[in-house]
Image 1: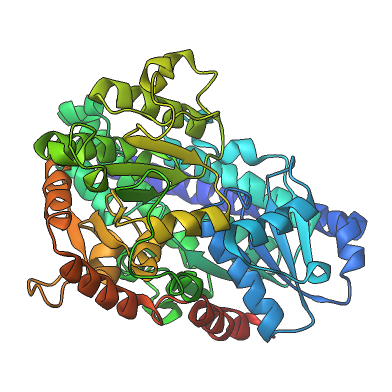
Image 2: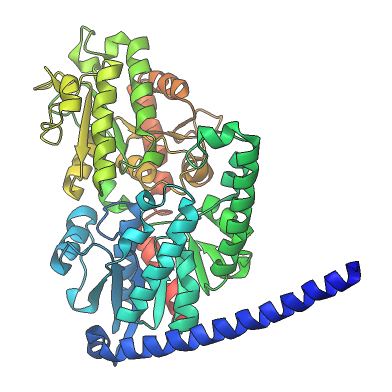
Length: 517
């Protein structure tokens, strides 16, 4: 009876396999026919019928972060090194016009593009890749949503080369098998990493593992199985890419472990505006408020851990009251400026929550029109007009405003754990600020590389809020000569390794040239 049951199961399995193969074959034919019809009716396809095209799948191209700098510099690289090739950006920013998009590229990042060879395809289904609509199984939900978004993209226009520049690897089979595109990927951050698996396995509470799951051995086991299955599928779809550029050593190590195609994978550091920042004087320019400035540059996203910055800064001022408003000398006053992009209502809520946290920690907040209508933060800004403030929250600054803040910052503050690279860290160092970064990811492996030798140190690394507070105390305890020496070494170390010119040359030779026929 046992062997009869096994035979029946195997037979059923065989039938099921054949049925699945027939279904998938039929589905492929239907989708191919639908795509052919869509190509013939697409207006942009008729406009670019005789042109060679490179598509950039970047649903949030108006976000204003480091990933968007990569996008615009990549397009600049194509225009400079491959004349005649047209670039097509797939974006869900349907409320932003084409001209406004290109103006933002110049105003926020200083990248001026030839407008006649840049085109935009506006996607209506971006909501399916937003984390807010997938409260559970977020990775799977967003990945399935990206498949739908990828299908919408190639139905509206199918390029010769498609480059994913935001991390939507589940679109690769769509582009490759149905669109017949050559597929490349610039990977900022793996969708899932071995660190995430280790965190769930050890039942550690973190961004990818909430306290409810961490406390339960059953839920942790189930989530670990889910993550392992997801990682296996992520590896399968990743192998559809013909060229993979990773933004740093940390990202590359994870991608090679998951996608298992090291021969197609290399490291290309993202573009940083080092040449413009190197013109800033190493001797810090005094702000209108006077004293010293600690600057944070990061989008107001949860993984950036802005709350830790406020906690560390409050602890630092408590331990060194002569640097606070209680001190007798205005020249010793230290203030924290938190600047970054707000993409959506979730970011704006975190922005307002930081103002409320300032009030809770006893930090005086600079008055801001972005907080004027928030009753939840009214207490934190009361009496903080003029220059009598400890913390300033500044959203969506222009590139000129960012440079102005970098020119006066004594310290550049970064707190994201396992940051894939850390463009802001490079910008701090190029601008002449002493960097204080998280002791993990790209800052640790590629950028700061802190040395035990004081004369070789490029900056400071920390982990917990208390470590950051202690490091701030050490930095502001340094002599002016020691600070200037460290800033000089740091600037020299990043000036060529992470320049925009270096990125554009490598993107052209390592990504575009191999993918062109």
